[in-house]
Image (cartoon, rainbow, N blue to C red; front, side, top):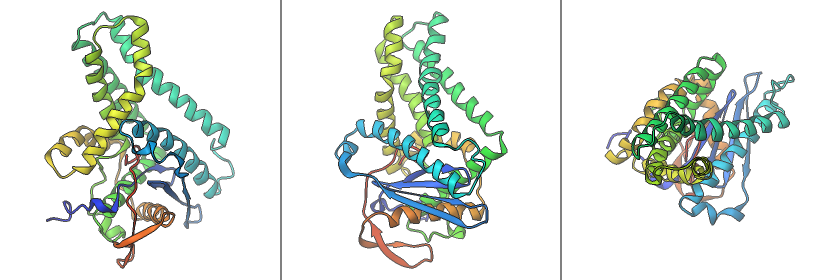
Length: 321
C-alpha cells in the first residue's frame, strides 16, 4: 500500500484552521494553537474543553451544529491569542470587542447573504419549479461563495493565511498516516483535505439544493423561515457527509463527495514554506500534549515513538474534522 493510502483511522480525526501567521488545531476536547512571533520564535498555547457536552457531541446532525458553534468560538479565542502572542502593539483590530463584532457581522452575512438572498432573488425572478427553483438558488449561492473567496484571495495577507491553511492540511495528513512530523516528510502530502471547512461550505450548498427540492413551492413567510431556521439542519447533514468522506477518502465514494470541495481548496490553500509547516506541527503537538495519552505508538516530530493519544470526536470546520 502506498504512503498516500496508508491512512490509520485509529489515531482519531483532527482538525483546525489557519490564523494570521499561525495555526489552530483541535482533537476532541483538546485544542492548541501556534504562531510565529515577530522575533522568529514560535509561541504555543493549549486548552481542554469541558466534558459536560460530550453526549451531545456524539449525536448525528446535532454534533455538526455544535461543532460549528464551537469552531467559531475557538477560532475567535485563538485569533485573539495569536495577535497578542505576536506582540502586535497596534492590535490591527484584534481586540475582543472588535473580533466579537466581526463574528456577529459574519453570522448575519452568512444567514442574510449566503442563506436567504439567493432564495429571494430566485423568487423575485418568478422561478417556481420544484427542480429549477433550488437549482437556480444553489447556483447563485455557489457564485457568491466562489466569488467571495476569489476576491479575498487577492490580498497578500490573506494569501499567507491560505498558505498556513495548506500547512495545516498537510500536517494533518502526515499525522493521520503516522508519518514523522518534519517538513521534508509532510511535503509529500496534498494541501487539500476532505474534511476542510471550505469543502464543508460547498457541501452545504449542494445539501441545501436537495433539502429545498423536497420542500416544494413556498409562500414568502415559509421561504424566509425555511432558509433561516433550516440552516442548522442543512449544516448538520453537510457535516455528516464531510465526516463520511473523511473516513472513506481513499475510496471512490469518498473521492466523489470531496471532489467539488477539493477543487475549491485550490483557491483557499497555497503551498506553505517550511517555516509555516513548523508552526502547524507546533500547533498539533500542543494539541496532543493537552489530552490524556493512551497505549500505542505514534511517529513524533523527531521520528521516535511516543504514546498514541486517545481517539476522540472530530471537528467540523477548518479541517472538519
